[in-house]
Length: 302
Image (cartoon, rainbow, N blue to C red; front, side):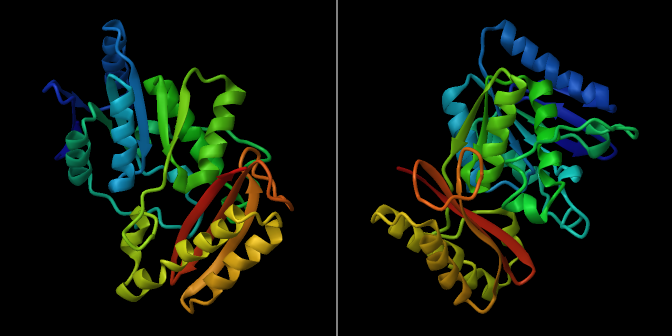
C-alpha cells in the first residue's frame, strides 16, 4: 500500500516490501518494477482507477478485480486536468489512510498515489482527446472534462499495463468513453463495467454525497425515483424516448431543491440522442441538489 510520511512518500505492497519515493520517475518506476515482477511470475494484473475517498461502490470494483486477477493495483489520484474552472478540485474529499485500509481489507496489492507533479511535468502538453462521445451529457457543460479523463486513464494504462481495468456504471458516459478509447487506440486490455452500488434509499453512492446537508441528502433520492419511473416505462414497452425523458423530468422537478442540468436518453455505444428506445440505451441525469452536482442513470438492453 502507499501512504505519506512527513515530506517523504512511502510505497509498499501488502507483502511488506517498502521503498522510499522522492521523484516522479521513481514513483512510476516502482510501480512498473512491481508489475514486471508479477508478470515474470505469470500473474495477471487488474487496475482500479479512482480519485480516492473510497466507498462501497469502489470496493465493489476492487472485489471484482480481486476475483478476476492474481494481483490488483488501485490508483488514488485526484486528477486536476479533468476539473474545470470553479469546480471542486480544492474541496474534493481526500483521506488516504482510510482509502488504504479499505484497499487492504478488500485484497488489493498496491496503491498508486502520485501527486499532480508526478503525473504532469511543468511543461506537460500531450493530451488524449475524443470527438463524438464527449460532446453531450456531462461533456456539454464540462467541455474539457473528458480530455482530462482520457489523458490520465491513458497514462495509468501505460504505467500499470493491466490485463483488465474496472470502472463503475454510475459514470456511464465515462465508461463508454474509456471503452471507445481502448478500442480506437489499441490498448491491450479489457475494460470491465461494474453495476451501480446504492444506499438503502436508492441514492447512488458517491464521494460527493458528503457535500450534502441533511435536508439535501433526503432530497437527493429524487434522482433515483425519477430514473425508476423511466425504467418502469421502458420495461413496460414504451418506445418513445421523449415520453420516458418527460416522465423522469417531471418527477425530478417535483423536488424543490433539485435543479436539472440534463435528462437525456441516448444510445449507450455512441452517446447520441435517440428518438426510439431500441438496442442498448442509456438514460442519464445530472442534477444539482443545492450546490452539489450529482449524476445517476440506468442502462437498458432491448
